[in-house]
Length: 276
Ligand SMILES: C[S@@+](CC[C@H](N)C(=O)[O-])C[C@H]1O[C@@H](n2cnc3c(N)ncnc32)[C@H](O)[C@@H]1O
Image (cartoon, rainbow, N blue to C red):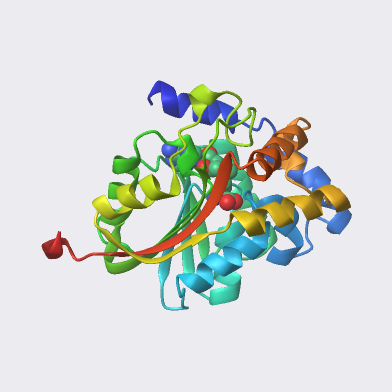
């Protein structure tokens, strides 16, 4: 593992995560009681606008039941469980953080989705899958932890079939220096943000054509304003990331409100290799 990947793993180390989840989820019923994926949505969708953002991205990518979908940087597995439940597809998640993968498997057992949804520990920069295995790939709030974007997007292109969809939802630079700490990095040295333009250029250079490109900053700002007014729900990402997480989320909101950062939604299509 490189220093950079070690730093990312440290950031998402989440000691005792599965036990903390078990304790927090006791409010929803006993360990034997099956949970609906939507009951977990306030703590298992680790990105701006939560479940609504995943649902929109899946619709934009036109995910269907016959697809095999890869979620790159799958966190504790909320997006993967939602995709399988709402679209009927098979989903594989891959994440660098072992505690997150363990927690994702635990939560998937609680929702009874083990047959359709699975998780592996691995790096987005060396995906543990053969060429052309997937019909679609999702990448939500992950790229800002990754310096080598050309390699990231080439790896995603490699594991997709020609014509496969790549849907990304990420934080981007937007004309100012970000305030730290933020949810993905305690310091600027752990953060590798690009502008929306540079992100799309890097994706296209890896063998993709752009289908959809949208600036979702305004919607994200509205979501943060609402969150500030209502306060966090009882089951929230603090269970996953620990007590200090609220400050990191607040800083992301400030960065968006002050025009330092933006939110990019985009869907690409894998160009057949011969056309490259
Ligand atoms: C902010 S969370 C987003 C999780 C998930 N995509 C979601 O939206 O719920 C970022 C995730 O990316 C993972 N990650 C960061 N760099 C990675 C890499 N190089 N390879 C695999 N996973 C990575 C982290 O471990 C973490 O789980």
